[in-house]
Image (cartoon, rainbow, N blue to C red; front, side, top):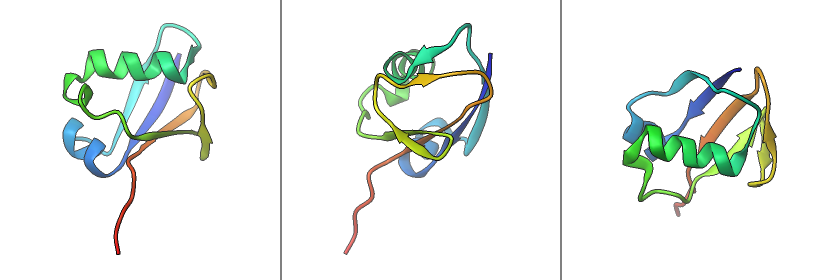
Length: 80
């Protein structure tokens, strides 16, 4: 199944892209998708504080990712 992955902030910097098209073998949970990303992009191993959104809605680790979803990795925002 194909999904689109949008990357922001430090996550985009670590991977070196703002967006990617990914082919996954099957419908997967956000938790499993995070593990997949860590194995595919080891530079994310020490950076796990990003939020995940599916089709512009924040998702918890049990949410399911299906064909043609748009996934966004959103780092924490701080400032003053």
